[in-house]
Image 1: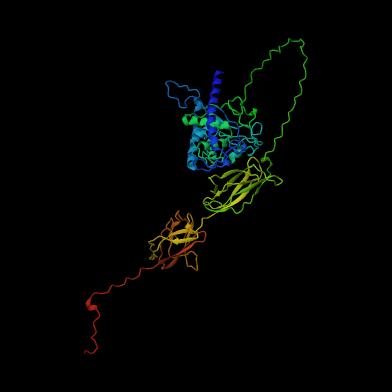
Image 2: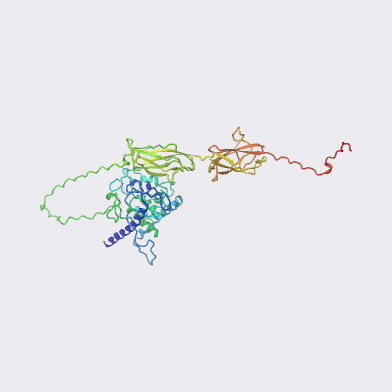
Length: 594
């Protein structure tokens, strides 16, 4: 009892200390009028979880979590003689495969989103709180958990109400959603946040490599710098919107930053003390009013004993009291839950988005707008709309993500972030869906066109000439511009044509060479560089003399003709003779002399 009481006191002290720091940071960072932090980064209130932020907008659906706090002993105890015994060493250590997944995710995020500054220790802290590091590292060689880790169903009974979004594919529940896997993603969040972290071609929330990478991208999905305390707090609260959750994760983050050690897979301690258990040592999260009996580990019943007042009677002796029939059980009617705004959405309508077209590399001028409506056509506000970029495209929303979730305003309209076209041209789709409700999605077609130029100019001044069967000494170089500005990455087509009146590919005269040394008279797939310049390969000539035209064109209408001459060198002019005998003789004058 004393040990238990000491642990409770220690938990309370740590929680209070961390809470004070976190609350101070949050108070400084979440003032209503703050639009930029100390470094000038934009911070919008839409990205800060509040008390009324829908649970479906978090990674876990605000599911229960484990409230264990870090051990007081050093995470890296000093070596001792003999066999060391360190209480809690398995709790402080991280299973090898799980630790590897966290570090690989950090490395990938450092490359993909360097400004986020995601530390692997944050993933370890969340993994500890969500699943006890995949139940002590019980994973196979590929990082997939041995048996699924599934949270309680989010049926509104003490938890958030999130109806089924995956037909039970991930959680085995076709009525409600459950958090799944070592990082406890709900299916509706995994649908857009899922990643393939181990390169097996699958995105599996039960795989620790996939889940850790997905958690990293989730925490970095906004313009947050996790080395900044205010941004770090926002990111953690977006994962599970609970102040107690924030405090617990921060305590493990600090613990792992001080040091940890690798332990064999499957030897970690099993998690205990869940947030929905009032005896776990942490305050229940707001909105969770009770435990889910079906989600706890089964307990072993103790042998039953009759109460002391009920002494057995001798056989044949009359009972002191005649038996009475038990009163019939009374059934308490289940209250009908009040429909949420999401429950009232019947369909989505286009809110005026047309003409989604952009040049490769540019930002689309128009944003996608979607309106959520009831069956009667009334607007529905405070509904989360998820916009997802689909198809074979490298276009993304601002920030580099292919998914964005936006809350509808009072007019029922959600406006997606700006779309940014990649270098891949063609048509792709952006689909709008309602988060937490199965209604038909709304598709928007978007088109990415080639980069264009309206002017091509030659950078050379020399006349391009060549002898029959030879090669041109100078290479053709041109510059592309658009409205006077440099036009980079513009495709240029170069064709040796027969004549201005007959602009088809010539079958004689100058030519380029392909990789095999064969003659080609049309080049495609060439692009201008960052300065708008393009230098063509060397030109050669066959034995046919004449004047030829090299025509260059670009998307946007720019055209440039360059003249090429193939001719034998001119005969040298003989030098004047200096021999006096060959000089013309002087004629005698016929004029009379005076």
